[in-house]
Length: 100
Image (cartoon, rainbow, N blue to C red; front, side, top):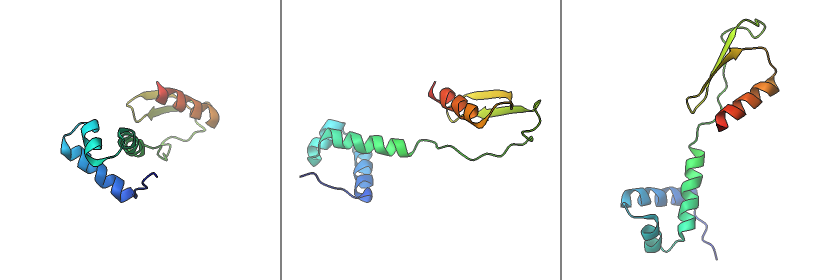
């Protein structure tokens, strides 16, 4: 039967792994857990630590079509344009630029 670990137990396990200096295989073998379980815990931790979207305020009113809109994404990419498109188009632009 699978062992259910609490979030605290998983965090301690990951800290122990990082401090051990062992390979994933050696560490997993020593503790008697599958390597895939350790990999899953590491993946889940990395996914949670990724940057999330942040609420922003516009410095220039959106009604001014000559205003320049600059969006700096978490990966360092920068989008600079005029604000003359709808919310759905902006969301699509961000999604496309963030995946590249």
